[in-house]
Length: 320
Image (tube, rainbow, N blue to C red; front, side, top):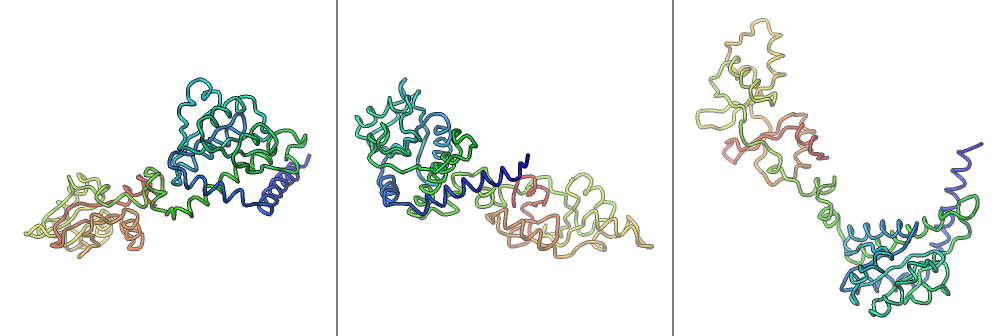
């Protein structure tokens, strides 16, 4: 059996379904977008079975892209949760046949509230179609299922139409990347746009030695500090240099090396620093990568140390 060919046929059938829907798009879709935009309440999505699963995903997409939304299961609605719907809301009800028993049972009650109803179905003459103020057609030539029974092309189309609605609403609201991140503060984009240097920098127990320190003092400080680096300051507590464990290892290869040598002999003078604690951590990572350094020192304008930011911290926190 050629599974690759079967998979390709499945994708081709579903792709053709989407292309056909795009070609036959009518003004009902625009009216649906306008209805949702004018809604002062929430967008409620409902459906059962596979349609319910698609509806739950749609609700999550709407909610995370600036349209307050939640999914309501028709069975739960019949047992008290119908009170979650108000006249100020808009309901999107999903049923391919338009005759799902559980969904049909709540439709009269939704209309009794005067709540606008958008139906997503293949049959405008179905119970769902007749109760709906607007009907978004979910019409497929055939399911990708070889028996033409299991919801495949139809669920793909419904999901894609939901995404199309969400994208239209995003553009209408001028929804930006920063808006998306505010709904996903723990996600990669949220971290990229909101986590600052001050949130991640280490400001206590920073390994420091004076500029008159010896190499052996620096080695002790590096070991205790666990940053692989020690900062060197002058008598006014200003940063003058930085010594890494790599610097020490390279120094060991020199014939005249001694642990009694002054630490500045093997230090990196005027190391890379940052005076902006409010800098985004993602921007700090760019500096670290471009300069090929392990540690970014945070100072005030007088070069006094306020903290350090290690590349390992940035990576561990998922900054990219």
